[in-house]
Image (cartoon, rainbow, N blue to C red; front, top):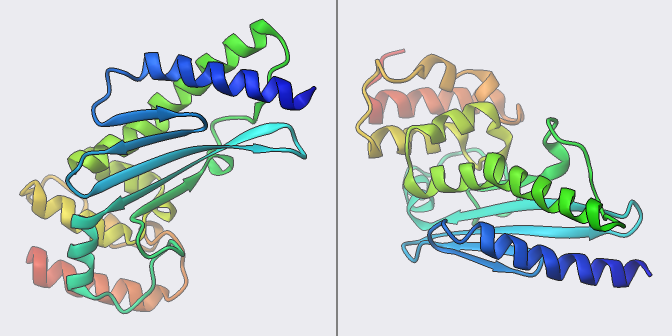
Length: 209
């Protein structure tokens, strides 16, 4: 019975999201997966994974950006990425989003409708916003990084890329906060990270600490 419910729900969810997300550029809606590919080196995958034990859906988003990775590789940071997959510049899992409760498999028509709209709201307010900020490399990307540095491979170095890309001045950003321990994501190799990031701030951004 659960398998039948899942099949029906997932097929209908795909149709629903395909219609609602059609206004977004570069987007393709598959069953249990959304792909955004700008054909310029940035590819995003949003996956819906069903968890049998809890009868709920988890959402994950991964982003690969060849331009950002090229920038980071040229810098050759002496500390590891926050993400185990070195090809990714971003990775997050829905369970870590404190604002939202679990997405349970609905069992009624009204429940399905509510869940479709809830998933759409989650996609628009969290994942698609972060995704397109990264595709566009706009100023809001720095805010996203500050809010959730653990989701980004190299929070400070990606912020530097945004600063250079948008020709931001020191008045436009809080470099001291970007260099702080709070913006590291994980505090392993903390001293090394902070020391190296300060050198990058000085050498690339002409910021005197």
